[in-house]
Length: 66
Picture 1 (tube, rainbow, N blue to C red):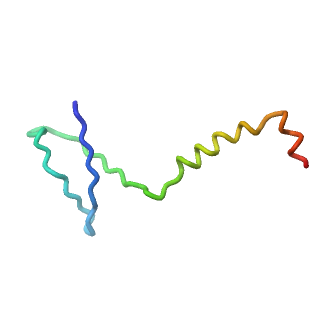
Picture 2 (picture 1 turned 180 degrees about the vertical axis):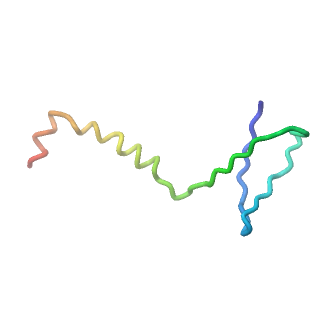
């Protein structure tokens, strides 16, 4: 099964227009609405926090009280 991805704008009335898909006729499809988050930096924050554990080790404990 082939998947199609379209990024469309939502108008002021909250409606979208999906282009015609000639490959799919007379069948049911599932449409998932996923708002794009352009200012979401959670992936970068999670990546930076995951590497903090490197500094949490016994050899580094001497610097915690300086």
